[in-house]
Image (cartoon, rainbow over all chains, first blue to last red; front, side):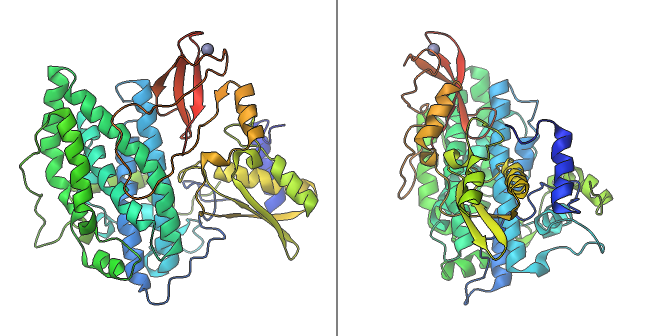
Amino acid sequence: MTDHSNAYDGLLEHHDVAGDSSQWAFGTDFEDPLAGVDTTVPDDVDPAALATYCLMLGDDALVMSHRLGEWCSRAPDLEEDIALANTALDLLGQARLLLARAAAADPSVVPVLPEGSPVPAEDALAFFRGPGDFRNVRLVEVPNGDFAHTVARLLLFATVRLALLTRLAGSRDPVLSAIAVKGVKELTYHRDYAGRWFLTLAKGTEESRRRLLAALEDVWPLHPEMLATHPVEAAVAALGVGVDPAEVRDEVDAVLEQVLTASDVERPERGALAGVRGRTGRHGLHTEALSRLLAEMQVVAREHPLGQW
Amino acid sequence: MVRAAAIAAEVRDPEMPMLTLADLGVLRDVRQRGRTVVVTITPTYSGCPAMATMRDDLVHRLADAGYDARVEVALTPAWSSDWITERGRQALRDHGLSAPGPAPSRTGPIPLSLLPTARAVTCPRCGSVRTDLTSEYGATACKALYRCADCLEPFEHVKEI
Ligand SMILES: [Zn+2]
């Protein structure tokens, strides 16, 4: 009935059928998440710009996924543990597809690994780039803080990303469009989850409200970066391939207003976290938190770039 | 080819083994390309960790029957819980799971929902309609957790997506 009555059968069969099917030890094992998908870049689109744009969206998802994954076994209760892990998994899936799309559009973005390395392109991008090559917004990289911080950040993140992907579904790049259509379904659940917890904490006890308000003050200045337009975003948006984040500002504002009003919480007044000489996360400028996050996420892979099993 | 398609259709989902890949709606196409059978599947969720097992199971089953098979991915159209067949829904109920209702149809901006998702969920054990949502997330991305107010048993509901 079942295909693997014990774990060893599966491993052995695998070798019998496919010959040498050993694979890199640390990645997921579906060789190419875009196997069979036509990744031809539309004629008038600059492959390098498309790849960079995919890295921006992919790195946002990857780093947010890692932060949410840090809650595993530490959430306030089992249901929240599972919810955060599922959310992390959805985002990891989006990241994988987007990094694979970046690599397919412009292979030169993929770090060069030692001869014979079995590391697939999207894993090379995740594990072998330094912080200066990551294009994620700083919102996703700062440490988790308490549960209220995680809820407030996830609300801001999912609200902006859902608005972006809803429009990206109309992309002229069929791969980006497909990734977006799927992501929209997932992010709808993520945003509802964060919005409901935001309301619950705001209307809960004095302590939960105090923590939520402090969390919102902290993360609020980080979210305008997701709504600022980088030249690459402007370029791909002009070609109908990407989305200019400025376009979704009103929509994001309306959703946040709905949550704040229902929660009886005032909109924070603090402005956007400044960049350095105009550079922000989208340009590869990050806080120290990203270096520490990547050090932990990448250390095993970097020790064993040839590791197989 | 008819036989290859039939073999592929009977391969089961590793996470919900009461369902075949065909009943789950992730098996999109089986066709001959030269000497190779190309099977196309689509992920339920972007991060679905079962994709690799599905691919391996398809390749092995077809190899057992003498076919050289390859598995490809179709990202579009995106999987919907509406694609679970009637036979699949019955199999879910027979195994104590609640089948999804109609997936929401979406055009334009998606409204935020601050209240728990309203679903008419029937307890798969006793048939009671007095059921309460425990969590929107379950052991896999595709399931929510419920509890029956009559027989008091917890059960899983396959989410609408
Ligand atoms: Zn019952």
